[in-house]
Image (cartoon, rainbow, N blue to C red; front, side, top):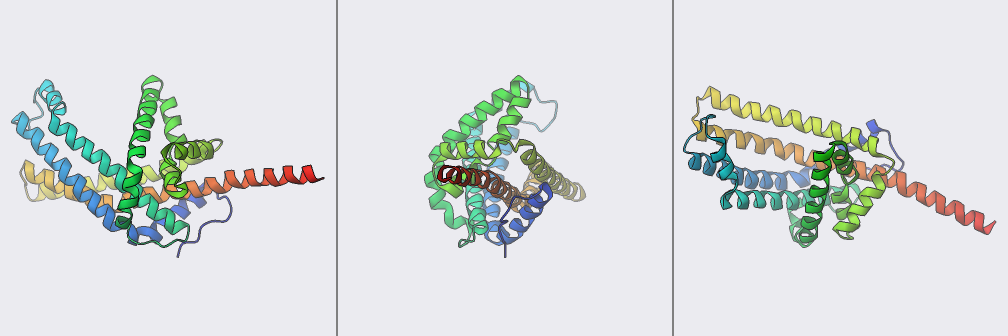
Length: 272
């Protein structure tokens, strides 16, 4: 049983809280993570197969211009768009589920939230594009502005699921909450993404190792690495979502608690 913190925590406390939240919500999230991993893996495999078929070779000496032309094909564009929509949809489902667990509401399976989250998707897609453009421009200019924006908007999915006020209101909430806490949030998210990176490498290595042991051909190697990656995603997708929710809850306590104290203080001063 997960118990939400009642006071702001240290960085270590937030990380510990994200682990506890992950454990409390995993039962509700693993199936949705598996469905996403299977669907995304199938689309990714299809794109890879199409790429190899169009190039006519798996050789690393393939003409770079031919590879570039593959990325410009309708098949690649449609596949990438499908993966983007699936990523937004399932991440929102996972985060909405974990928010409910954190708030002590009825959990249920994350897949049961598909209908609700689908209604959010149009606004989320538009907001995601704007965030991607802003962060991309920042990264291309001096890198630091892009990283700054990424962190300031890092919990907007959680705000969207918790407040149910719309995508752009959620962006504003994330900006407000992270303000003044940028370094704290950066450290927690850095730790979470290092864990994900290590897991990704381990499962990718495991898939490649199996391919080497069985001396698999290229197609089988692609399939093995996709399956290994899918298993890893079942674990780390809920973990990342839990970390974001834990950060959000801590920020709410910090910012909303300070705001409440200020309002009470001003009210007392006015009555005095």
